[in-house]
Image (cartoon, rainbow, N blue to C red; front, side, top):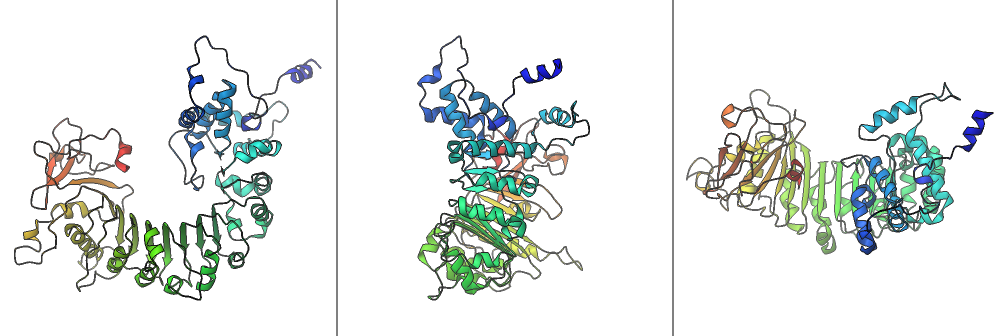
Length: 537
């Protein structure tokens, strides 16, 4: 009986988010002055956001897409500790803890080794039990907290959880979201997007209890649910929509899209019946929504003519800022028809495998005054019968567009050609284009803006980074690192790692300057990068 008495007398520990809301903690004893009392509440919340960055992630990305550096669980623990300092800190920390909730499977730090061992340890009462499923327990604690306090439930805007947790806990997810009226995004099991019977109850709760949802997907098997959208007034604030594998006609597509007046990001993936008629200006169809981002994947029947028709509408032309084309009928040789009618386009990505060379007839260069980021990932089979890959001709066309000064705002370029930086380096000055004064000339006369080139071969995993500065700075030369994985070149370039920069030669071409011994590379403009992460900005 002595043992049981001690167990009964032992105080219970609070469990994560489940009990933090129950009673505001007493202020901790301090010997000095509390300077935070003078801080406005928004400033205090801003400081706490640095303690736990994922609490201010207002995007609609999944748990896997929104991974950040560091350990999210440790960040949340530190923010929970901040809530124990004073009532004023408690109110701000609690609001952050329950706004964008994230349930992670493990600690992304050395603490996970110790905790994993404790979870596997058998207790005195259960020596044959299974190890604790930590994310499932965290979900249950969170579910109990929001179901016991509607005030906390009203704070929640997003709920992220790992794949296995959302697949194995459909009932708990349904009970959780049933009390979250302001929920905008939640990680859901994949079967819900295909209208599988096992997810029917969860989807009913989502439709009835979460009217403010901002992201949804419809996949193969959900054609009926998508066709019933017109007139349902379901999720009228939806902003991001993904349609994948659906067999739907153009009129069904346009009618379904018209049900979401605030949609700005649309992905159309593997739609066998999708063709240019879905984008045509047709008085019998509802208008195609004005989108900021449009992604087309595995849609071979959509061509440049269809997109040009879509962009012929002024409201669509002014709205589109990002366009992704992967394995579509929009050929690289027809991109020149799209760019001039998309004056606000800042990001363009085309991923295409080609089997024939670039057309021999004269094709206008890529022309855009707004494009800042270009993914030009054209691939083809390796050389056969001694002939070079046909993709080389497409990169020649890209170089001609760059040299013609038709893309003045471009700053970042991604290509799937490991030799592209060297090809651009060897591009002769205007009077030498084509091998001499009598050869063909590129209009304009050479690249004039700084350009960051990221190149990668078909058998490489990481991008090689090469900066270009066509304006030669006298007395200064760039020595920024060129490759993230240190391309192996001759030792004359600074050892085994390539350390060089390409600077303008004054004639529209470039000169390669090796790094000095012992120097850390900097840019050709004379400024230094403080971290590797800055290379992606």
